[in-house]
Amino acid sequence: MLTIKKYAAIDIGSNAMRLLISNIVEENGKVTQFSKSSLVRVPIRLGQDAFTVGEITENNIERMIDAMKAFKLLMKVHRVEKYKAFATSAMREAYNGKEVVEMIKKKADIKIEIIDGKQEAAIIASTDLKFLLKTDETYLYVDVGGGSTEFSLFNDGKMVVSKSFKVGTVRLLNNMVNEIVWQEIEKWIKISTQDYDQVTLIGSGGNINKLFKMSGKLQEKPLSYMYVNAQYASLNALSYEQRISELGLNADRADVIIPAIKIYLNAMKWSGARNIYVPKIGLSDGIIKALYYGKI
Image: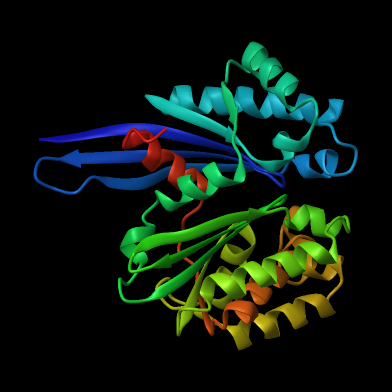
């Protein structure tokens, strides 16, 4: 007997919003399969508001309401059974975040929950991460967002320690990350990884996915530190306009990709990792899995 369900996840980040609709295929005696049915990304940079003026501006509230109305309709036509909508650091830090959540519930009929960095890391960990981890190896999982970065250390297939830091691409673009924060991250990574001989990075987030796509590598192959460093240098050598016209990057990707790569490079340097794997997973995938398995 085969049944197909449709679940959706809405991820309201600091750089963009995403709606992921997944097919969940259940068959007797077989492992449940999850496959992407549709993914819509809307470039609304809430972090620009939240991290600089401390609130979500009128203009972005209007755009958010429109985006949520559109997401609601898309879920309706896809016949989605269940959904969860989570907002991360920008909405957490905007003093009118809760007010915006209420407004969206009223005008678009979408219920949004604001989650903290710890919950974010836990949801991401409920993705297929455990299938990617070789039990005898040590991994540092790095999820770079617009407002924060989640670091999780895995050993023997289990999470050992996890921490969220206020270092994100939109913050870095606005020069809002103090040198002390970088020092804290360096110290945390070095202490967390010191007992392990060899650490491998796993990267997630829109920027590292883009960099991986540009590399033309097969999904299960990693990127080396040298390759990522060379790409960082060549992207840095181009102007913002050139990154759009010559590399075909989206306007809202062409600026944040540089600070994002800097975070991954530092994480590799401080953990001694020589390679970074880039599986196609993120918060949206985690939300769908956690929803299906009753964790949220």
